[in-house]
Image (tube, rainbow, N blue to C red; front, side, top):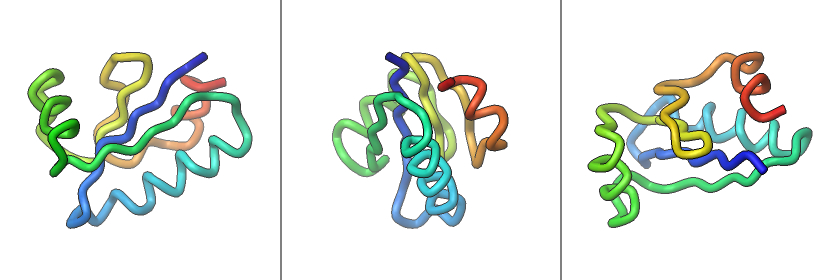
Length: 80
């Protein structure tokens, strides 16, 4: 099963739309989904591991997939 991890921050202006996109897709497609705040220890570990420089960042199956709000069609292509 595909695993989608969204790295987000409370101060990020693009994060709410990105969270909505992934939650909407989760209701239509079968994939594992988690959200991690950049300001948590787990979020900091992912920033270090992947060299993340901006949020929102989407990791799919352990690979950086998107920085910023992905196009819906691009996101669907990776989870369907």
